[in-house]
View (cartoon, rainbow, N blue to C red):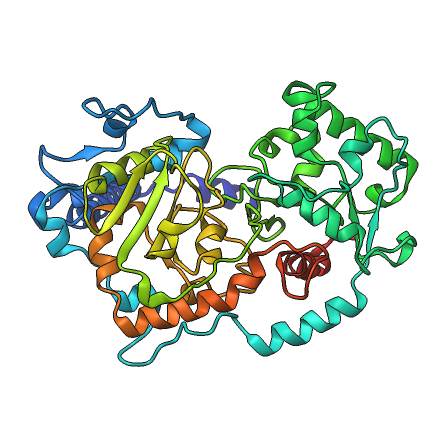
Length: 463
């Protein structure tokens, strides 16, 4: 009897309308969702708006940075570029009509972060009290173990610091190593070390005829293999408490044969862009690229700065091509194609703003050159993880401009009031010491600031 009841229940017939309801329900929901998405895209997309009313779209007169890669009617040299280094530059178009100037959304309040008469970005540190207190603790207790190498090592030139003061645009890694070896942060007891330093120089490896760019990855791979088998420290954390330094862009491929090192180890590099893979701002450290000057300027008086802005350099990126196309003949913005006959800082000293414009790589020494000569840096380098950004408030002493705003550059800089320019220049003078390499190192200079960045990352190491 019970068996028959179950059988009869399973054979129960439903009306046709009930079946049709469940058949059309998912179809109707899918169609409704599609229509809603289409309506949203149609009403919000710039593609459906009047080009003349949009600050980012233009009619047929619009051009992109692809048009600037080969300038055509100019005398510029052929622009060097690769997909890796220039891809980010090609994600935007530069409009030419007046509607952009009338309709654009930026304001000085957004640019500097102040509202009304209240200046919120005049402090050079994010939190002065915290930084100064933590800096003291770092100076007192931070310890680094350097993997030892003897003077008679075949690669002593790569592994040991120089006896002389190096010169050139990529020597930040060499100055750091020289200062670290002579500092109180070094410990010979690895058990009390917070971090471990792999002292090979990427710059010297690149120029060493035994290695060169072709064998650089193999050298690094073999070096890490050796220390991981001779010492227990690498295997303990997967290299997460290890670091190395590099200022040349070839460092971007140095770890390609040691994926664990690339993903785990701390990289102190000048090519600090978070657009490309391989650099992680929360883990890695942006090392300032500094071309060490032998003498300080005789005077940094701001009253003698009668030029709005200055830039000199090769056209080796679409961004620089765009800059020259707009401002090469301007009377307020001095954009000079190629290098200057003398690099004595006279042009920087007479300019209020000095432009750092991304070239083949995102980093150059122009930022630190500007600070050295008391000139307010203007950063035209999207996705640049600026040096010491965990400590310093860059809005307090620089102006960061997006590529899209190249046509508006003069208006942006001229719109900065005398009061705003005064505190920018004042803060430039305050932060100059943080971007200097000294022998021996001095408190709060580039070496100590880099050490503090490492100190901040010691607590992030997975054990």
